[in-house]
Structures are given as structure tokens and as C-alpha cells.
Length: 79
Length: 464
Image (cartoon, rainbow over all chains, first blue to last red; front, side, top):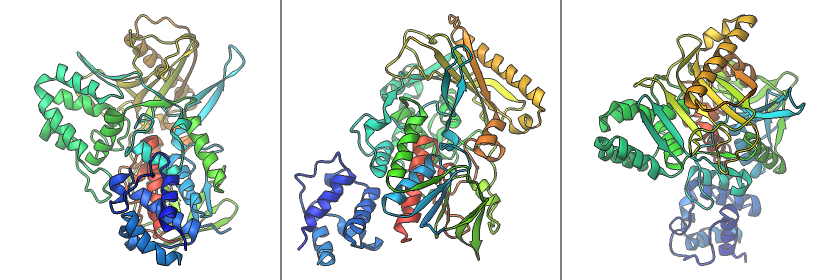
């Protein structure tokens, strides 16, 4: 079973290298905790596709709001 | 040849778009008509007759706007760094000392610290400071990046808020000449972008000039597997039933489901036979004189970087009636970025508004004569601004609207492109998108963000 939480964190630390990703709260939106904008969310989606062949259609972008929602939305796609 | 995307033009927007597409494994090619990259912000060199070496020049760069300090977040420049995965240090930014807007009997200074401009307005327009603060608040909270905004006149918005016309003229002056395709006015969303870029954020210059930025972009693109072909003009954008499917060069047809054009909206229309729109060519074009002296040019105790000079109470922003208009000028001292160096040659660049039709009508001999006249006028302005300076002139070069036309292929030598922008990049032709100047984000940082956002919107989010 892939560690989806870690996969997302790894991507965020690559696209926003100046952000501290060590103490993220899984229930609070990523945007509130980090300097991420819609362009960065696009990059998260693009990296998921590039690295893991996981597709996230545009209408599902809101499901990546928190780490918790990322895990519940993405886990079946990694299964 | 088949690609995932074709980008026309290797200027700032084309290179940035190419990087974004290549980053996510799109097979992308950038086709450039010129033999070198850069577009409107390119470079050249001239032999130094005295010493036998060569001097390097930037074509257009006075200043890189949108300055941030390392680590600053949620700003256009920081977004650009993240999207292109470049590091702040790579740009080697040298901040300005300060710049000033000089009108008869009135001066306003501004720097990379917005407090300076606020204090200047407070001191020199005390009756306007409350209203100026209201304007600043309106600008701060305005979402200029909303692609669905309607166009509105900045002058009308400013007149609703401010009362002193001189202050309005002075605030508008640098913003118009650094980025308006319209005459006398600019779209308010564009005004907000420019206000933030120039006054909130400020100016810097990369060490090494525009070459530093261009080589960063070209290297990044190449690393990611993107391709650039120079001396490869696109002669036709291939379409069928209103849908673009590739381009034709002098020697072959290249196919792709997405074509991003950075060559200008009217220029794109001329090579697209099915195009149903005729975007208007802008009239704003300029003349620039570049002088090199045997020593640096001292101004006062603290050296200003750029002077926005206007010798009238109203600022007229429109093509010169004659060949050039010496009522106003932008005077840039590229040596006056931190750290100030006081030894070695000194350079100054002086820009006038010009008139394309008049320059175009000149025969070769008259053209040379007219350039001499412009040079003499610019030198006398420099003398007026720095009466104590007695440096020896080593070199001078002048580029005119026809020079701009010759090297950028912009119709009528326009610098800020068409007066008809397409904010969402869409054209009447499906799969053909406009990026760069005519998408509406101007300046070097704006152009790169245009390439990025249009590549994201039309090349990545819509599945290729």
C-alpha cells in the first residue's frame, strides 16, 4: 500500500521548496498552512500524473484541499 | 513532424510556456524567426573602436519590475520561480537605488520600499494623502488577474478618487510608458498590475542584464527536453474548419493539437487564413538612444536609477506628431543598481516616444541624419539633468521604430502590441492561443507569467 500522505508531501516540497512541510495538520486546508495557489495545485495534479500515473480530473481538484482529503480521495487510485 | 504543442516565438512568454509544457513531458518545439532568443527583450553587441573589444547591450531592458527580496511569498515573481522551478539566486537581482518622476517644479521619488512614495505624496501633496491612501487600498484589494474583467479607463477611475490632476499625471507617467498599448490611458486592470509591479514591488536588474534571464530559461527548457529552432519563421498557421492543427515553416509542416503564438495578435492573424478577427495594431512605439561614456554619470549624492521626465504639467502619452517628442523621456542609468560601481565606463539610455509612419518614410540618408538629431537632443537632455557631468562620449547607438520592426517583426514597430488584448488567450480559431504581450501581461515578469498561465490553461489543464 502506497503512503499517499508522504507522496503528496514529497510533491509539495518539490514544487514549493521554501515551505516547511514537517508539521502539517492533516485536517486543516493546505492553502491555509502553506503558500500554495491554484497554479501550485495544478502542479500537484501534474506531478501525480507524471510520477504515479494517477489522474485527477479538474472537477475533483477541491478534493485535494487537506492532507486527509488527499489520502481518502487518492488512496483508491493507488490501490 | 508531430508535437504535443508548438510555440511561436522564443521571447520571454514563449520560453516560459515551453518550459511548463516540457516539464510535464509534452513534446514541445519553439519556433523563432530571429537567430537568437529574447524577442522584444533580446541583446546585441557592438565592437569597441577604441579598445578593440566588444560591448554588450540589452535591447529593451531598463528594469525588471516586480522586485522581491529572497523568501518573499505570494508575489508574481515568487509564483514565477515556483512555476519554472528556478531559484531566486539564479536571477542575481541587483535592486535599484531609487527612481523619480520629474515634472516642472515637482518631483516624486519611489523605490523598492513603498513607504518612500507614500512619504513623498504626503509631503508634496498633503491635501491628497487621504484620497491617495484610498486609491492604494483599492489597488491592494483589486483582483487584476481575473480573466473575465471588463475594460475600464484608469483616468476615469483615478479622477473619481483623486482631485489633484498633477498627482494623477505623475502617478500615471511611469505606468503608461512602461506598459500601455493604449494612447493616453490604460485599462484599469493593467494599471493595477503596473502599480503593484512598479510602486509596491519595484525595480531590479539581473547582473549581466537580460542575457542572465534568457540563458536561465533556455537552459531550463533544454534540460527538460524542449526544443528551440532559430531562423525558423512560421509562414502559416494550419487550420481546418476553424481548428488549428499545426504550422508551416519555409521547409516543412509541423503538426500539433495546440499552437501558442507569442508574436502578437495582429501578427498571428496575418498568418492564419481562417482568422475572422482583425485585431488593431497599436500606435505606441519608441526611440532609444544609448550612450557610453568614459566614466560613470554622477547625478546627486544618491544616484537615481531611472528618471521619468516630463516637461509639461500634463503627461501626453501618444505617438510623436513629428519624428520624436522631446517633451518627455525615460532616462535610465543601468549602472545605478546596487551595488553601485563608480569606476569604469558609464551608460545611459534615453527613450522618447516616436512615430512609426514618419520613420518608415525616411530614405537612408535622411534616416541617418534624423538619428543624429535625436542623439543630439537626448544628449542635451542628459546635460540638463546632470549639468556638472563632463564625461567623454565613447559610443552611441540609437534604435528607432523601424529597428524594432526589423528585429521583432512587430507590425509598425509596436512595443506593447495590439490595443485589442485577449486575456484568456482565446482566438476565434480553436486550439490557437495568444500568449505574451497581446494576452495582456506586460514586462518581462508579466510576459513569463503569461506564458506560464496560458500553457497551464490551454496546454496542461485541457488534456492534450
